[in-house]
Length: 210
Length: 161
Image 1 (cartoon, rainbow over the protein chains, first blue to last red):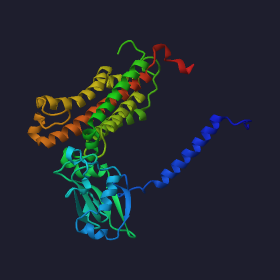
Image 2: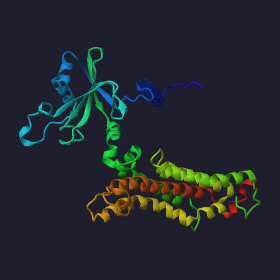
Image 3: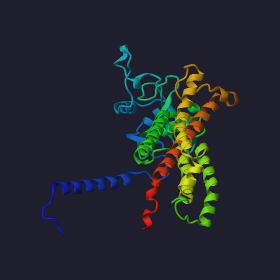
Image 4: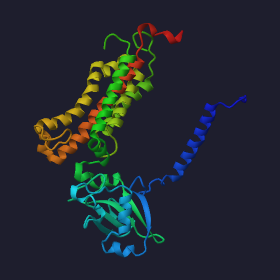
C-alpha cells in the first residue's frame, strides 16, 4: 500500500538511515587491514607530512627541525611551561628537551619490526606523561617517501606493550590493563554484576524461603 | 519437571554424557578463570563454570541441581567474589599500615616470603582478582537460571493438558 502523504518523521528516519549507511561505508573503507601491526590502533597514528628538503641532514645530526617542532606544538599535544617566570618560552625551543634516535629499517624495536625512521624522545611538556629523568618516545618520523617526511604519534597500546613488565610485574599485558591500570573500573563492573543478580532475585524469585 | 511430582522420563545417553561432561567443563572453566598467563580471565571463566551447572540443571532437573549447588552456597559465592577482589586491595593497605594505596601492594607478607614483591603483586592481581570475578559471575548466572526454572506446585502439570 502506498502512503498518500509523506510524514515528517518518516522522512527524517529515511535521511538518518541513508546517512548512517554512508558513514558505515566510510568507516569500512577507512579501516586498516586485519593484522596490520603498524596501523593506527596498533602502533601509531599519522599527524602530518612535511617536505623533506634538507631536513634529513638535520635529523641525522640529532637536531629536530623548527618546522616539525612548531607544528607538533600547534596541534596541542605539548603545553607550554607553567612556571611563573617562563611564560613566554616554549618547550620546543628549550635546549635538550627533544632527543632523536635513529632506527634502521628492519630492526626489532618495541616488540615489532621497525619501518625505519627516527624516534623522538620528549623530556618535558607532553600532555599526559612527564618525567624529566625518563624521556618517553612519543613521535616517530618515517623515512622520506616521495619527498615527504611523515610524522606519527605513538598510541597507548605501544606504551603498554613496552612498559607493562617494568611497571606492573605482570605475566600478561591484557590482565595488567584489566586488573591493574584499570583496577577500579573492573571492581565497578563486578559490583554491577552483583547488583544485577540481586535485582533479578528481587523481581523474579517467587518463593518465601531460600 | 521434578522426579517426585510426575513420571520422570530418563534418557541414559543424555545423563551419561552430562555426567562425563560436567566435571570436565568445570575443569575447563577453572583453567580459563585461573590460567591468566594465557588467554582468558574472570568473566569468561565464570561463564564457563556457570554453563556446567546450567547443563546439569537442564538434564537432571531442578531438585537434583539444588543438591549440586545449594542456595546458601550460591549466595555465599555471589558476595565472596566481591569480597575477594576488595579484600586483595584492603589486605595490602592493612599489612603495610596504610603506607600503600588500594591495590598497590608492595608487601603481602604470606606470599612475599615465597615469591618476592613483584611475584606477590602478580599473584594478587592475576589470580585473586580473576577468581573473585569468576565466582561472582558464576553465582549470578546460576542463581538467575534457578529463579527462572522454578515453578509453583500447582503450575507443574499445566503444559500437558
